[in-house]
Length: 253
Image (cartoon, rainbow, N blue to C red):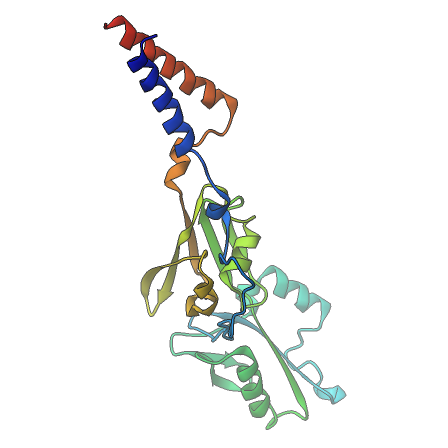
């Protein structure tokens, strides 16, 4: 084996092995070498949007008015679970909810607690000591790309952030790019696409750290994935290719 061929052989093996290396830094979130003290983590209560589907329960402390929408009945409660789109109340294109007896109530732009108080005040004209409980039925987040369990996930608490959504999908794989996470969000009939870096501490103060209903999160692969060796078969295949190249070089001399 001449020195030139040997050098080429060693270079090829070294290059491929180094290119495949995924370090701990590639896998870290919110990187910091010291204790992190964030003055204020950006949080915001979810504000209702057009297309949100709500379950609405109004009850009263007086026996004759108790359970206004009759949803505590076991039959009705079961139907609500099985057919939420038939028994829920939709925030329409005008941003309103149409409720029995109460009429149209402006909903878009309000938090759940704010809207509960509004409906409670309106209900006082009809019922004594009303108690209002609202939930969003169709809040969903879709996670795609380099995650362990891609899919669409129903969210109970609408005040959800991106790290929680990723935990539902089994976390980003070792080949996922944490520095450039794509989020696709529909805003006023327009799909907005933007990126956030999950390795920076500033992500905690980013307004897009909190997610919106029907957001799509896409994790792109690292370039290193295309050189990585997942199993011994790939290593053997590369070694055989390198040996073949070495033999061809020797034969050509």
